[in-house]
Length: 287
Image (cartoon, rainbow, N blue to C red):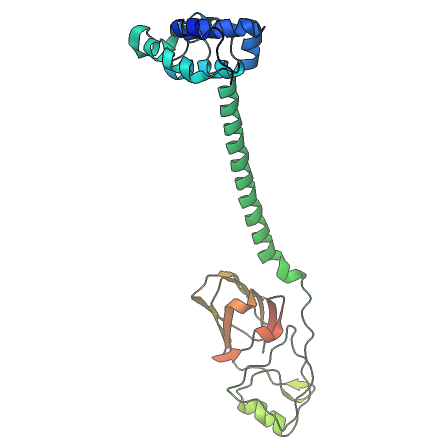
């Protein structure tokens, strides 16, 4: 920064007089300074006349003088030191008589800050609402839009009957009754009537009495259960670490969202849910 002109005389003059002299030497008018500092013409005149009681307060006076000095490429430190006696109590500062609330730069800074905070708040609210809407639609509608895997309708050989410890054979669609004879029929009968097994194609063996399904939710999962007539027995979201028991006339149709998060037992026998899951959605028929 340049030194003040007439340094010896400037030492004895007031800060306002020094600034006015430097402004005149720089060829600037009071209006030019007011426009570049973005303050009113009256405030520039008050600074140059050392009428600090017409300015908002000591903090603003120091800021105005400092910015004025930098505009004129002067060192603001001597001016601020010379300003302190006037701000120490010799000249009372009346902040209530200040016509404008804040300098233009300060007002713009506050407006910009509030605008940024408002935009951030709106984005957060819209993002949260959009996420909840997407989550509810994905849970409620995505299972019905998926194509269930094709059922394996092949009849197992009589040499490999199911035992009570093996998972119950399930299919996303109801398994069509097929003729089974000999050891296969005996093995299905010994397994407690699980699945649709008949001695002849035209005489299927119906399950005896209602069947029960026990669903344990390891994670939050969606579940729908219907009985053989299509009656809705249960529909809703199971929370993690809870269980749901459903009893009804078989066959029971199950639709499971987030299949990896459930454990199912049919008539107290485990069911391999993930074997019939597509994109973590499982459609099962328990007979």
